[in-house]
Image 1 (cartoon, helix red, strand yellow):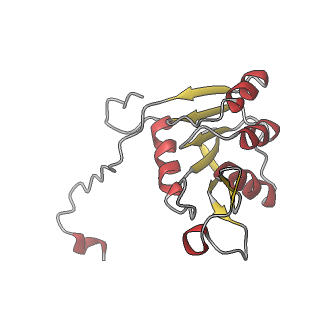
Image 2: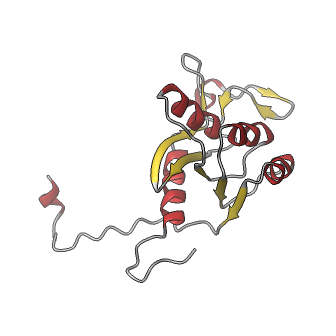
Amino acid sequence: MDKKENNRPSWDEYFLKVAMLVSERATCPRMHCGCVLVKEKQILSTGYNGSIPGDGHCEDDGCLIVDNHCVRTIHAEMNAILQCSSHGISTQGATAYITTMPCTNCSKALITAGIKEIVIFSDFHDTLAEKFFSIAKVNIKRLKVPGREIDYDLGSFTSAKKFQ
């Protein structure tokens, strides 16, 4: 993931950093995951692991574990797809930038939603996702973890007071 000569992040790095920021909203302590759906360099939606509306959050009420998985939360990928659905936004041909390789169910949802590429920097233990992506001809792009720092170029600003 090379940066351009002007030190701006590449598009892949930019959208992965957005996914990292989105993951900070996750409410399940077992895994913080973020997903950003992008089409033609435009963000369509974002999603993170979180409980259904009206239910308690794992971090407050504890995880609901079934077969070693927390089933209280909706995964980041599902939340991003559902956000598009609720606003009538087509995901056909979009790219999903995700902090972690999707689980099997999320991979099937992404495929059915028309996602053509996923970009990740961390793998998940579930190998069926990769198999389904291969069958559906969804490209998987694995990148290094983007830098966690954000380089603010304040230019001629010499004091935070100028932002107040």
